[in-house]
Length: 327
Image (cartoon, rainbow, N blue to C red; front, side):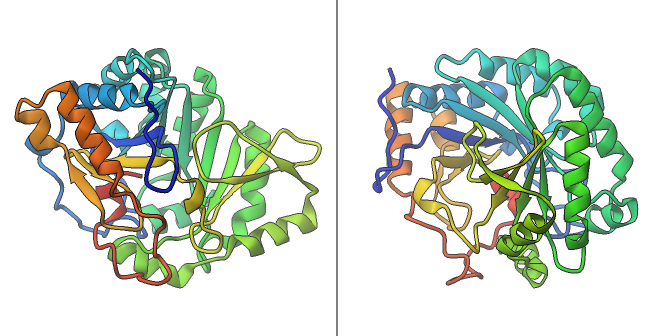
């Protein structure tokens, strides 16, 4: 039964970002420190059965969208099996995934067959040497994964580019050309002070209003929209099919329309990326809680959702790394 899960501020919560692992095979400096090893142990991870049961409870309360995230979700073994199970949950209408694409060439077809319809790929640069600097990895693996996803029929494929001063801000136009060539959607993202790594990256902060103005000098930008549950504000490049989104948590926050919560791999539900409000579901899942008790707990958790983040007012507030929260 769809009872519509609504928070204290009248926002309908119908989107769960589901972290299936806190591990990753890259080390983006704004997300996870080099040499970081303090991962959750698998015994602390929710099992596929527990995930399916909890997402089922969310679906009965009106959740319609689920996004598989991490860490890097493709690090989790047998992910297509979980995707197929979530696709079959009554009420879930949209299953998508965020990935760094390093392993996507091996899994693109299986995940597509399992019901993952859309993917977002983190790609901050098209220069191998800069990619190595930012992530510690190899760009060619990502490009191979992207081409495999394109061949498998995912649509849309969204490229997420964190724009950083002195790192990749000079590649904005090149990324636009790349996405036009391959029929990808492009989303620019501002750096966020999540954890010590995120706070350190704020020295590379670029206001996306300036990026938009720069693009308008070369391209005719028309008002545009994209389906999905995300926060980007879109424009379309005239004469092309390319839509460009701007995700601006700092320069223009979008908290008033926030429709999502984040479920970490250990069963902790985070109500806001920029706050510490959370609720631990693992004791309920492993303690014999009934479906009614799970649903009541979800409602109690949503009551904790704050009105907005405080990235600017309290940049030191969030101490967890982005990979621990779920993307």
